[in-house]
Amino acid sequence: MSDSETVRAATTPETRGSAPALPQQALEIAAGYAFTGPALDLGALMWDGKCLPDAQIRIPLPMLNRHGLVAGATGTGKTKTLQLIAEQLSAQGVPVFLADIKGDVSGISAPGVSNDKVRARAAEVHQQWAASGFPAEFYALGGMGHGIPVRATVTSFGPVLLSKVLRLNQTQEQSLGLIFHFADQKGLELIDLKDLRAVVAFLTSDEGKAELRNIGGLSTATAGVILRSLTAFEAQGMGDFFGEPEFDTAEFLRTADDGRGMVSVLELPAVQDRPQLFSTFLMWLLADLFHDLPEVGDADKPKLVFFFDEAHLLFNDASRAFLEAITQTVRLIRSKGVGVFFVTQTPKDVPADVLAQLGNRVQHALRAFTPDDQKALKATVKTFPNSAYDLEELLTGLGTGEAVVTVLSEKGAPTPVAATRLRAPESLMGPVEAAALVQEVKASALYGTYAQAVDRESAYEKLQAPRGAKGPDEMGEAPEAAKEERKGAKEEREAAEEGRAAKEERSVVEQVVGSGMFKSLARSIGTQIGREVTRSVFGTARRRR
Image (cartoon, rainbow, N blue to C red; front, side, top):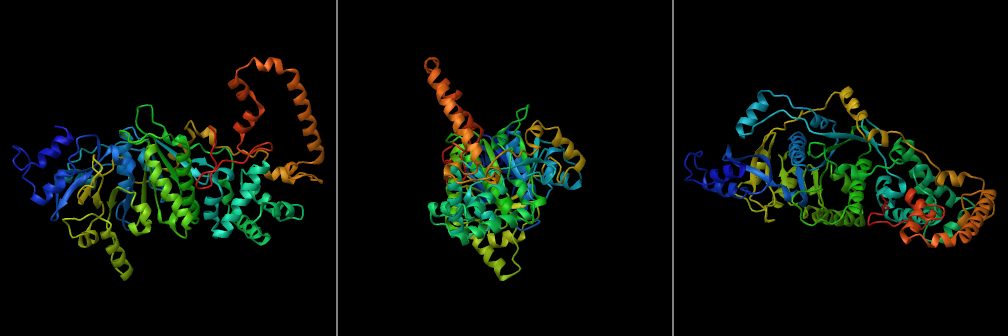
C-alpha cells in the first residue's frame, strides 16, 4: 500500500483491517494531509496526548518553493527538523542549502547510528528507518573553516549589503552607494576591501577632492566614517570574505550522479562573533541566485530549497529600504523555483511582510518564563490559522522533536494545524570527524576552482601607481602608462582600418564575441574602459556567466 493509500485508509472510520478509527477532530486534521502527489513525511499526528501513527503529516513537494518558517526555543529540535527535511528533499532530487551555525549539520553526509531512542521514535511514527548518508559539499566563508572557500567581490556584494555588515546609518549607506557609482564609472574594480578603502582614501585626499565634489552628496566627514569602518572591519580579519575567485552560486543547484540533490553545507561557527556578516552574506547568496535564475512558475519540485538559519540577525537594525528589498526578493524568487525557509526562535523575529510569504510552518516548543516570553507566545499563536488545539498550552508543552505544523496543500490552501511527533533523521545527528571532513572537501571537484585566493590588479593597484596631472578618466595610471595606452589605442585604430574589409566578412555575432570590449567585460564587470555596473534592488552587481 502506498503512503497516500495508507493515509486515506487511516482517515476512513469503516476501513476493514485498518487501525482503530481516529477521533473525529483528529480525522478532520489528518484528512487535510492526505495528499495524492509526492510529499515529504514529517511525522505522525498527536492528539489528546497520544501519537496516532496512521495519520501521517506531510508537505507536498511542489509547495516547498512557497517558503517556510522553522521556529522554536533553543534545544527543541530545530536543527534535526532541518536535517530531516533536507534528507528527503535530496532523496527527491532537490538540491538543498544549509547554514551550519553550530557545526553539527555536517553529519548529513554520513549514515546515522541506530540506538534505543531512534528505534523508539521510528516505531512510534511508523517510520521505516534505515541509516543513510546523503551527497554533500562543504563550504566556509572566505576559507575560515574546513570547507571550500566562498568569496564575493566587493563590487558584486554591493553597497546596500555592505552597509548592513558595516552597520552604517542611512546617510552613510547612501554615501557608500555614491562611492560605488564613482568606482563603476571610472573602471576601478572593487575586488576586495583594500580596493574599496583605496577609492575612499583617494576621494578624501587633496587629489581626489574635485572628484568628491563632482559626485555630489558625499561629505569628507562621511567618507572618513566609512573609511574608518572599513579599516576596523578588515582589522578583525574579515577581509578574507571578499576577493576572487568569486563563488558561483549555480554550484548550489547541482545533483549527484545518482540523481539525488546535492546538500550544500556552509560552515559558520568560525564567524559567530560577527553575526551581521554571515546573515548578510546569506542574503547575498540568495540575491545572486535571484539575479541569475530564469522564471519557471509553478514547477513539479523546487530547483533549490535554501535554509536561512538565525534569521533574526538579518532583520536586526535593518533599514526600511533593506526590509523592502528582502520582502521583494522572497516574494519573487518563488517563481524561479527557489524555496526559502527562515529558521529562528519565534515568528515575531521575522517582519510581518516577510512572514506573510511563508506558507509552511513548523513551530517547535516555546518557553514562557518571563513576561516577554508570554507576550511572544501570544503573538505566535495569533500567526496560526484557527485550531482545534489550545495552542498556548500546546506550544509550551511540546517535547524535543515535536512541533506544531501547518503547510500549504496541493491546491495552495493552508492545512489544519497539526501537533506532530517528528521522524528521526537517517543521517548522522552530529558532526562528522574533522579529518574525514577535510578529506571530503579536498576530494571535491570544486576544491581546485575555489581553494586558492587570487589577487589581480584592481582599484588598489591602480590608485597606488604614481599619478601626475591628468583627467578623471585616466585616474590610477602613471603618465607614461597613459601615454602608452593612448599610443596603443591609436595603433589599434590604424590596424582596425587596415583590416576593415576582412572584418566585414565576419558575422555580427563573431565580431561581438571576438572584440576586446566583450573579452574585457567577460573578465570583469568593471574595467578601465568599462561602463557603470548594472545593479539590482540590493545594489549587488549582475555577473555575466
